[in-house]
Amino acid sequence: MLEPSEKKLTDEDQAKVDRYLQSGINSVERKPFRPWVLLFGLIALLTLLSLLSLYIAQSKGVV
Image (cartoon, rainbow, N blue to C red; front, side):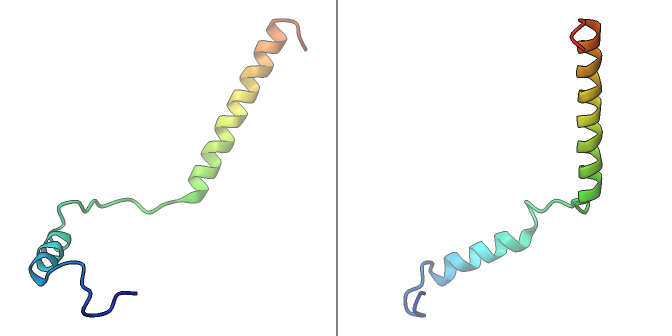
Protein backbone atom coordinates (compact mmCIF):
# COMPACT_ATOMS: atom_id res chain seq x y z
CA MET A 1 0.00 0.00 0.00
CA LEU A 2 1.26 3.49 -0.79
CA GLU A 3 2.17 5.86 1.95
CA PRO A 4 0.56 9.32 1.65
CA SER A 5 3.98 10.75 0.82
CA GLU A 6 4.49 8.25 -2.05
CA LYS A 7 1.95 9.59 -4.55
CA LYS A 8 2.25 8.27 -8.09
CA LEU A 9 0.77 11.43 -9.64
CA THR A 10 1.25 15.05 -8.85
CA ASP A 11 -1.79 16.98 -7.65
CA GLU A 12 -2.03 18.71 -11.05
CA ASP A 13 -1.92 15.41 -12.96
CA GLN A 14 -4.46 13.83 -10.60
CA ALA A 15 -6.77 16.80 -11.18
CA LYS A 16 -6.47 16.24 -14.96
CA VAL A 17 -7.29 12.57 -14.54
CA ASP A 18 -10.29 13.37 -12.34
CA ARG A 19 -11.60 15.92 -14.88
CA TYR A 20 -11.24 13.39 -17.70
CA LEU A 21 -13.06 10.68 -15.76
CA GLN A 22 -15.90 13.05 -14.89
CA SER A 23 -16.23 14.39 -18.46
CA GLY A 24 -18.20 11.37 -19.67
CA ILE A 25 -16.35 11.12 -22.98
CA ASN A 26 -16.18 7.34 -22.88
CA SER A 27 -19.41 6.71 -21.04
CA VAL A 28 -21.96 4.64 -22.95
CA GLU A 29 -25.52 3.94 -21.92
CA ARG A 30 -26.06 0.19 -22.01
CA LYS A 31 -29.10 -1.98 -21.71
CA PRO A 32 -29.15 -4.14 -18.59
CA PHE A 33 -27.67 -7.60 -18.99
CA ARG A 34 -30.36 -10.27 -19.24
CA PRO A 35 -28.85 -13.72 -18.71
CA TRP A 36 -32.13 -15.56 -19.44
CA VAL A 37 -32.28 -14.13 -22.95
CA LEU A 38 -28.72 -15.29 -23.54
CA LEU A 39 -29.49 -18.76 -22.17
CA PHE A 40 -32.61 -19.19 -24.31
CA GLY A 41 -30.76 -17.90 -27.36
CA LEU A 42 -27.99 -20.45 -26.86
CA ILE A 43 -30.52 -23.26 -26.37
CA ALA A 44 -32.36 -22.22 -29.54
CA LEU A 45 -29.11 -22.09 -31.52
CA LEU A 46 -27.98 -25.50 -30.31
CA THR A 47 -31.40 -27.00 -31.07
CA LEU A 48 -31.34 -25.54 -34.57
CA LEU A 49 -27.84 -26.87 -35.25
CA SER A 50 -28.79 -30.31 -33.89
CA LEU A 51 -31.86 -30.48 -36.10
CA LEU A 52 -29.81 -29.37 -39.09
CA SER A 53 -27.20 -32.06 -38.44
CA LEU A 54 -29.94 -34.72 -38.11
CA TYR A 55 -31.47 -33.60 -41.41
CA ILE A 56 -28.09 -33.77 -43.16
CA ALA A 57 -27.40 -37.22 -41.69
CA GLN A 58 -30.81 -38.52 -42.81
CA SER A 59 -30.43 -37.06 -46.30
CA LYS A 60 -27.07 -38.84 -46.71
CA GLY A 61 -28.42 -42.14 -45.38
CA VAL A 62 -26.32 -42.23 -42.22
CA VAL A 63 -29.22 -42.47 -39.80
